[in-house]
Image (cartoon, rainbow, N blue to C red):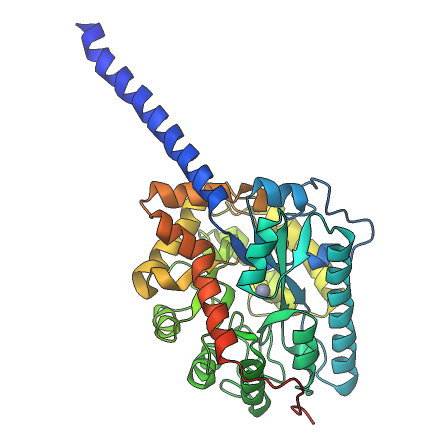
Length: 415
Ligand SMILES: [Zn+2]
């Protein structure tokens, strides 16, 4: 009797395990077959560090993207960010920002040149596909923060020529182009500045994607109203699941979809899932914010460089004393589910923000990206849907931006 009762249970659980294993094997195969692209990685911050080695399987606390991880993660293409925090908006500050941007472009170009059998630079979807066929990974370039443009829009052509195919208009604080979502002093222009309006037109003319990640809601709506080509959020998540100003509201998701744009999901844990309340941590965070004169814990990234370093060290300490559980791969796919429900399957992609603070439970570096596809398969996403998420949607937008460009070889912008 006992045996007869037990037997069906054992049989069912054995079947369950093998079905799960089969599903995972299927997902991994699918992940290898489709083209995968991540639109935001801060790897260049490692490239400029002396001694950093892309060929090494670095400890994930040091680097979340290197060649062994790209291979394990089945990642075919990635946008490396020419990132810089916002500094003084003075002629000297702008010159320094431009020099810093050029230094980062150089570091990216040097890394590509140093590893010709592993990676190659791409500027179009077709190039990326050719690079994959040659057995390599494609490196795209995006600029994070319009600061290095300063007030000289002619520089956009120069950055385009160096390979940049998107520019995030601002970072953590307002700049000369627009209002940021997280400036502690609030909005300055109620959207784009007059120079920002011209920048959007110039980016349309060149065929450089306008990236609205980090911008204020009003900037976002200005860009949608003015841009002649679809726009992207290179690394943003949905506010419905984590209510931070830097995430997108449902109304913004719908507006982005109406303009045929795409939101590339940011996998940074606090953006993926609202953090659980912990009064002791909240008090410590409040004291931290007061000390550094910031409104939001995450504004630490907009502090001047020297202060930022000290503040980040203190932030690490605080995180150790009051740990927050990491969001999981399932939470990340909850974000995808939500964006698909609100904006549709044609308007979501992946912009992980690895090497920029991202780490999830089950996805601690890009080497674990197959886990994301496995979860998508588990939830019933079709191969076609998963291809759209991993590259189809972004590539559609890139091609549309390319088609909309009107650039003549020489520019008079900024003169
Ligand atoms: Zn960012």
